[in-house]
Length: 332
Image (cartoon, rainbow, N blue to C red; front, side, top):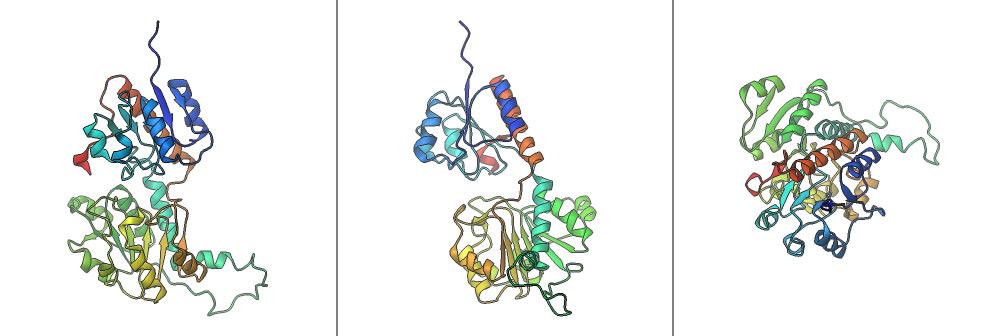
């Protein structure tokens, strides 16, 4: 009698080409409702799965991992960030964790640039004018004035793949590139990007016209942009976040926007995702902030590439090899 195929459980629907290929390769169970699993559903899935494929909407903490069945040996995350998975607890139970790095770099950098322009040039506000019930009366010299982006100073917090991809795009718009990172980039990379390194985040924040967040969410970066640090920013500065909501003290940011102590903000992520603070919604209606529903990486090509990486990691693991995108606690 042939040995039964390992069961792969996926917590959300994936693009059709990915699901089709997964069905060809594995014994796979999809979440047909595409609604985030409740805790009881996560526990049930992890008790029966040999390979578990979660997404950012699934919080896999130590208490849930403690309920996992002995057959579960791989969590193949569909996504780059793993802050929703207790990697240390998984490792202690002998469960390998993988992710899908590198495939969303250009998509996220594109959306960051778009969000930056949307805030500075007031694009969402302008886009609502013509569909409005009130008739548009036409152009005038002082109406809907945004600001020129060329010549402004951009400060990038976190100069990994996405931060560097944003730097390339921002240079094409005539922005001055500045960055703060845990480690300084090689001189050749700095020169290619025409980027200036700031060892002090505080000093960089105080001098920039635009701040863009691109570091991962870890215990060390929780509220990295604290109330104190946000207060260092210039009154006419703009902040954009397409990384993780927890990196900014959202309450402090809201208070500054309400008090006109910042020019504006563009947010694709929120501290209590998917919940959005009602004060942010009021600010959006007042055209003081642009809010997006976590769209930074939302391209069909990117999602398919993510699925390919998930399948490569699963195949390598089931074939007895080290998965190419394994995440270790020491890496976080």
